[in-house]
Length: 78
Image 1 (tube, helix red, strand yellow):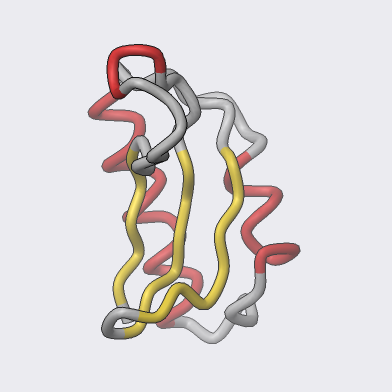
Image 2 (tube, helix red, strand yellow):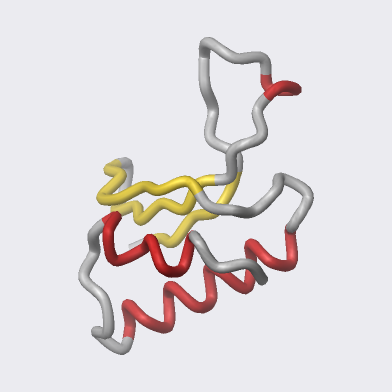
């Protein structure tokens, strides 16, 4: 299980114009859940903190592997 936070690729938008930061749960090449966060692309330390928080919640079996479970994490400012 991988917790990924970053700017996703979009073949229809130039990379320089992308500004959404997504939170994704991945297993291999499969994306199990994805949600857009309130983070800006330059908030690297906040993104790492988000990854740690979500990973800890998953490892403690506090949240299911769903987008709705990720929402409270993605919507909180850091």
